[in-house]
Length: 172
Image 1 (tube, rainbow, N blue to C red):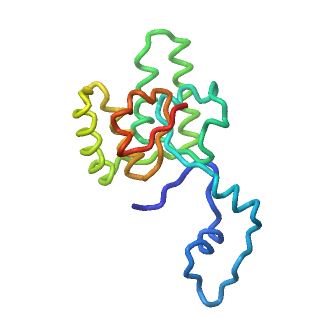
Image 2: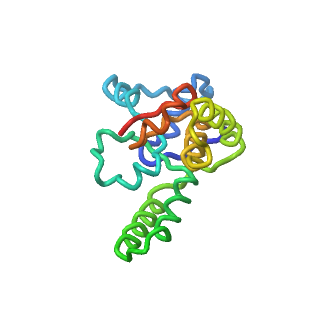
Image 3: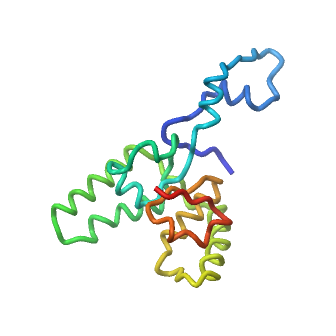
């Protein structure tokens, strides 16, 4: 799995090297004050479901992860949104949300690891009696989050209840 670019809290390369434990001979150890280490340990990361991106401005920032990502599937849902309504004001609002999201995040791709994880996600949903066709986008988003070992932040936690052994779901 490659590096994951998350919005906001990206550690500096110096801190990444210092945490690895195998530092080059000519390097310097950086002492990090306890208060900063505590804040770093408490920083949260996660993938935002489409529902969270849509309602982002209505959600208390304290409930969101410190560093967040969206998936290419969320971007696809947002791109389809303006075409799914006949109301011109709603179409404009959805277009604004799409443009905002593309300016903020580079989406995580649905890659080979996400595809492998989708098999497990699909099986869990099917075993719980949930229709996988109607929820294809949700399952693809959950698969991408699981492949990157990131929790999924959603407004619709009950939709992901069957997946709790595969991906951590955080209700917003």
